[in-house]
Amino acid sequence: MATELLTRPAPGLQTFIPELVYFEPDALNYPKGQKIMEWAEQNGLPIRMTSSHNRITNLPGESELEKYRIAKRTLVVGIRKTLKFDQSMPSAEYAIPIATGCMAHCHYCYLQTTLGAKPYIRVYVNMDDILNAAQGYLDERAPEITRFEAACTSDPVGLEHITGSLQEAIAFMAKQPLGRLRFVTKFHHVEPLLNVEHNGNTRIRFSVNADYVIKNFEPATSSFLDRIEAAGKIARAGYPLGFIIAPIIWFEGWEEGYAELLNKLKATVPPEAEKTMTFELIQHRFTKTSKRVILERYPKTKLEMDEAKRKYKWGRWGQGKYVYPDEQATALREFITEQIFEKFPQSSIDYFT
Ligand code: SF4
Image 1 (tube, rainbow, N blue to C red):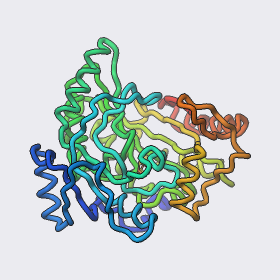
Image 2 (image 1 turned 90 degrees about the vertical axis):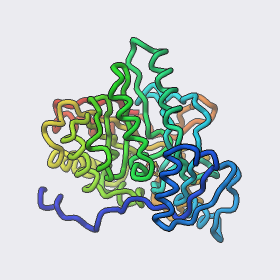
Image 3 (image 1 turned 45 degrees about the vertical axis):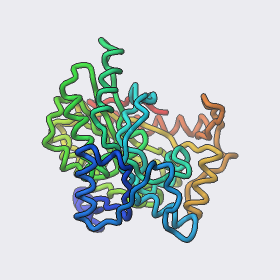
């Protein structure tokens, strides 16, 4: 097992460099906006101004697919105006908005539909306003603990070398006896986070999956090995560590695939991290709309989205989603849960959904 794990297939994924950067003019009134401008200039990136991200309509690209690919590599630097945070159950009470959009191409990603026609990446320079709003929610809920999820609309670790926003949020939360920050990532670029004072108030989770899922459905993310090495660094930096296994997919050989995943985690995660480690388990789901968008954007995807093989689950906002039928969902849950308890008896499972 160890030798197999040490076989690195290719050089690690490079940090993200956008192909095009837009600035909303007000963003340049903030030090973070000015810093990102300097960074873009130093990297020789094409820079454009836009009065608002909503007005970006002329992204390059011949076809819709090409436009989509370029949009995923376009950065928009602006101000977060909506400071009302969305709810983020079951992983946290609130979503803290530090970025929107992602440069990776996971076929199943729910951002496909939530961001709709605007798949470009937005980062926000007014972190003080965002953290002040977080303070408001903390005060409102005291003496309860309030958890904030920073990866609801993005994968902020992949953008940290550009923004530094996670470092600010981690340092802020370190001083909050009732505040907890959490985020999940498929990137291994954790260096900027390793020396931040976190006081144990931030939990960093890595999204992991069976080889079959990573290989077929997660283009432009860090390799499994790189993610696991990064998880080791995070654990050694004293952060509470977690893993999200999502989406859990029923494929031929899924039992071997998920058993192997847990074996690999066991062989690589520092034992001292196990005690406080958490797992979150999320089965694959899709909606009619997401299926249509995914098939347009990734026409050759092997992602199984046959409504006839799924169970329809009514949603809160009218549109329901397709999940695995009870029998399959139970088999997935029981098998993976047993594997986790067997290999990580000290860790806990937060939820299966
Ligand atoms: Fe979506 Fe996460 Fe994949 Fe980015 S890394 S495309 S946010 S699932």
